[in-house]
Image (tube, rainbow over all chains, first blue to last red; front, side, top):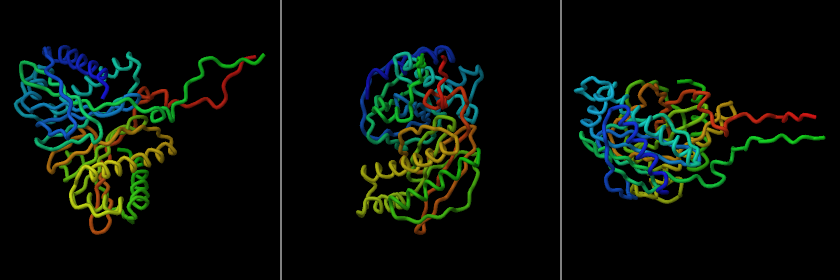
Length: 173
Length: 173
């Protein structure tokens, strides 16, 4: 995977957590994993399609999920209910959305899919032939792990149905 | 969810199963589910982005997956190894790809994400506010469940690749 896709996600996560939940995060040691990911209690899965394609996974514990949502909504959560799930999924959505804006500034257009929430510890998620960069983000309440399995689309793959818009119409005299 | 997104997937599944694995499948009774999905042994997840957006899951048991891969590659597979995993993910990819072509004929352009494979029973997948249509596709005394959580995408979510191309450019004299 291309490392230049990494920073937008780390920056976006820091910005969004600061803005939404007033939480400071610090980045841990990066690792590259080829094997399937074994899930934590809560996983938010978001797909990217476009010039960058692949999948982004946000793994966290229920405890951290509830803390984040409590901070976001300024309301104490004691159960990881539907509202809390929706809040965590939305957080993943906003971080990825923000990251795609940064990616697009860097010249990579992409669109994100709606988030999917996977709950249940110990399930394996395999991205098949995509190796994943794993970024642990530590905050005062725990660790959120971002898994990035992204690659640049091969020429033709994305461009098949992409027709550049005409910049200047040909003028006949 | 819009039911008109359903038939492309059923047709695509039938065609792909026939062509790739020589299986004649039939449709079981449709179901509409609002609650979370408890996973089967194997789940292939794909996202659609475009004027149709959402998530598609293909859920099946280990035995069914191995039966499918065995038929696809004409070789008896007895353990769900990485070759089998890749085969099943590819099957999901081809069915969804075929369906997206059919959707595009119906006027809904969508791009699909690479497949993600979820291994492990009884995790919970939630599509949050999307209701899912569940289509059982039955063959040889077993079957796969296709879950469709799709909705019409927002127009401002369109990318240039999905813009209509003017049939005749305006040429000023």
